[in-house]
Amino acid sequence: MIGIVADDITGANDIGIMYAKAGLRTDVYTLESWNPAAAAADRPDVLIIDTNSRLDSPEEAYNKAAAATRALREAGCDHFVNKTCSVFRGNIGPEFDAMLDELCASFAVVVLGFPKNGRTTLGGVHYVHGKLLEESEFRRDPVHPMTESSLVSILQKQTERPVALVPIGVIDRGPDALRAEIDRQRSACSYLILDVRDQHSLRIIAEATRNEPILCGSSALSEEAAALLTEKILDGDAETGSGAARNGAQGVGFGEMNHSGEALQPAAECGVLCAAGSLMPQTASQIAYARSKGIAAFELDSLLLLQPGEKEPHLERLAELSSAELRAGRDVLLHASNEPEKVAETKRIAKEHGSGNTDISRVVSEALSSVVAEVAERTGTRKLLIAGGETSSAVCAALSVSGLRLLREIEPGLPSCLALGGVPYRLVLKSGSFGSESFIVKAIDHLKEMAE
Image 1 (cartoon, rainbow, N blue to C red):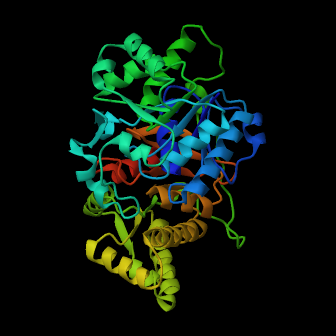
Image 2 (image 1 turned 90 degrees about the vertical axis):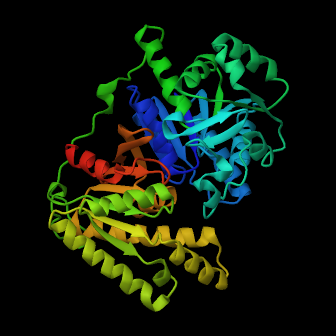
Image 3 (image 1 turned 60 degrees about the vertical axis):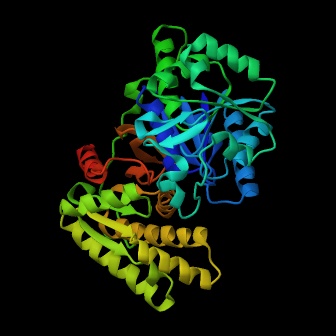
């Protein structure tokens, strides 16, 4: 069983779908809801624990990653991946260190490139859609502004363990040459970052690292690794109960009631409920596109959230408007304020009250999640799309979603999933910086096509 520690829920799904689409049963649990009996009763091929630690302090992130790694080891995992943001936002050093410490290991290969989503690494320098990381949209990230592009430097500033690099020239020489270089560097460093030019680079890396016990970085390498693993299974070199049939969604019945004992409207008659808390430009363009296609969109006004007398009436109004649209069979999109001027003013007011960017991010995510949970309760809708890692985690908590089974990939790194252990929500949890301009509309159509 492959064990993966992810620092947010969208990242967990991002890497999970790489295995699920190869026919491997892949389940995601939050660290808080993890119960060893879950995997024991229905053992997956790939087990992912989401620590939701990207916004935590380094110490908190280390402790969570250590606890998640320990849980995976105790569950029977013997191959480990530490999944991080594809541009190294967050507590990458502490979380990588935690996994090595917990496994009494001293070495891991790190691969951040994700060519299908525009992330490449050349000479240890990271690029996003051809731009230096420090010149990309991530330079203006409200919580983790990325102001340099050297992956070795970024990681080295977060760990006392030595960090080294394998340039693209070595990788281009093929799996055997790369494997030899990895073995040569194994005693000289703890973290070995590998360049990635394209998908072919990832295939070479996957072949060279197929026996490495610990890998770190983005999800892209796992796509190639999963394909190699599936080939090995099909060749008869391993036995598993895996297969595409195992990923089929469980049957779902209705006739459920809400907390007030009222019969819920069948989800098939409702529209799809979407919520976007991310401020990334990709999500902003997706919201604008959805609006242009006639999807009802309502803004969660971040300024009103900072006014105690205005906050609750505002949230109630959003719940009323959204519920009415969904009951009429129309799709709804709730989104946080994303105009630069309003975002700047929100930060200014929050700072006057002693709150930083991380605090206001959580306030917005919690407000959005409370509205989503209320609307789901009122309407019985079971199909939701959420944009933004922090918002996705907050919504899952508000809906009491403790586990997810990965189903189908909509776009690279963007899957649908089925909630486990409670109400069988069909969900799409989207990283804020991923997806085409039309992704929200595409994901709504995908959710509508899913059988109940």
